[in-house]
Length: 265
Ligand SMILES: NC(=O)c1ccc[n+]([C@@H]2O[C@H](COP(=O)([O-])OP(=O)(O)OC[C@H]3O[C@@H](n4cnc5c(N)ncnc54)[C@H](O)[C@@H]3O)[C@@H](O)[C@H]2O)c1
Ligand SMILES: O=C(O)C1=N[C@H](C(=O)O)CCC1
Image (cartoon, rainbow, N blue to C red; front, top):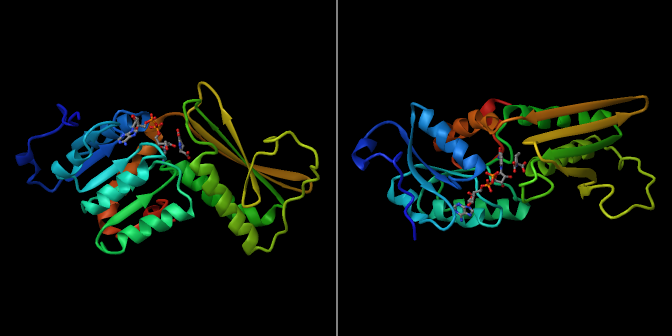
């Protein structure tokens, strides 16, 4: 078992301060690397542990982390959250793969720990969060809507967590407005040609070398269309949202899905 201790990890004595001690899970991944940098650059935060695959998860508890940031994989994230809750550590989760059943499980785990917070957000990019809100607002005015997400080819899940959440929010807005299913005469299609069906909203996933994270919501009505697009050109775009969640989570007990509330949206 490898230790997660690094040169960036300060001596325990230095932690008698008002800095928030933060541990990062998935610390050597694309997002984890960026989070480590962002935490190290933040004057009010202190990086106390970095853990990646095969490393000793208990390091985050031993190092005194008050908040853990998880950017790992959908297949391991539930075990990580369980560990954090068991060890009384607030958890900021960017890893995707959360359906209603998983969210309910996390909420159940939190019940005996009313002081503890877990935030699970498929996207910490402010622009992406605004895109979701704008799409939700627009949805009731358009009979047709489809979501196209475009990502780097190393992404393991499809469609993206952001696209699934967008589609669910749009579908809820359509239901609330009493809209019928979007018109679609397709009776003959190659499997996958019309995308994944997320609560009646088609979601299409593109994987392309050179991309980072991008999404379009296409809305159509007679004689017009509205396209709402967001582009993350760099993973730095997610960091203001991640740091906001790290700073807020100690004041937000329970399960929070998305950081819209932290932004006053
Ligand atoms: N919420 C957001 O804003 C946002 C933004 C980008 C990516 N993501 C999501 O974050 C996740 C990670 O994305 P990425 O591009 O950084 O992936 P990545 O593959 O580059 O990084 C994942 C890291 O987790 C590590 N890992 C695997 N199992 C582990 C375990 N049990 N404990 C600790 N570390 C473990 C891997 O070794 C790897 O270093 C994905 O689910 C992705 O969709 C979310
Ligand atoms: O790069 C990824 O992987 C991303 N995953 C998130 C998702 O699935 O929505 C957010 C965007 C980047």
